[in-house]
Length: 217
Image (tube, rainbow, N blue to C red; front, top):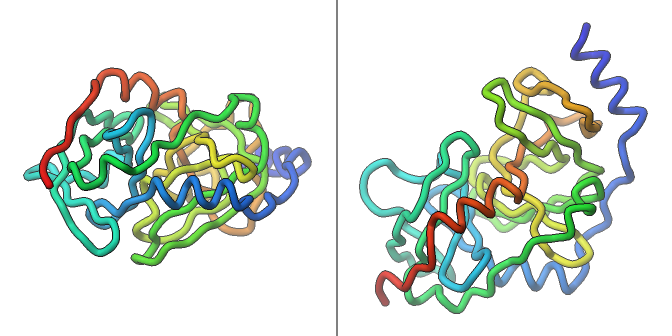
């Protein structure tokens, strides 16, 4: 009953459906993306750094990243399992990927888009206003419309007008079963909402990872 009450309250407050991303946003995000293992990753922060979801990283060996059909090894610089974020040192061939930059924090409550590789195909999904929630382990998350399928973990959640980064998509939620509402709107959707790590969680991880150089040709 509590979950239903929370969802009903959220539905009354949910924001508008997001417009499709602008040409600027589509271009900016598309140029930053790569595939990593069976997931999505993107260049962020400074040249040479890549971000994905921590659960996408193999526990043994180097993760393999792909752009344009070519697969190369990357270095794992930092893994934050609680926030489900991993930072990679990209191979030399990917150092030219233009990194995504942080959006204005006020845009966190507006429409969002997510672009990734669910089922191995490039796909963009835009959704209604997102809100904050706290998982049972205390980790903050963003809830959004636009969970996809296997392969979209690690994809960027971004402002559809500018392509600037708001979070990192982690997985889909079974309604509100694995999230506790915390003074924020839970996005209304007939489908399962997506759960993402807010960019505020990514910034310190990038700082801890340092400034990498390429790992090969």
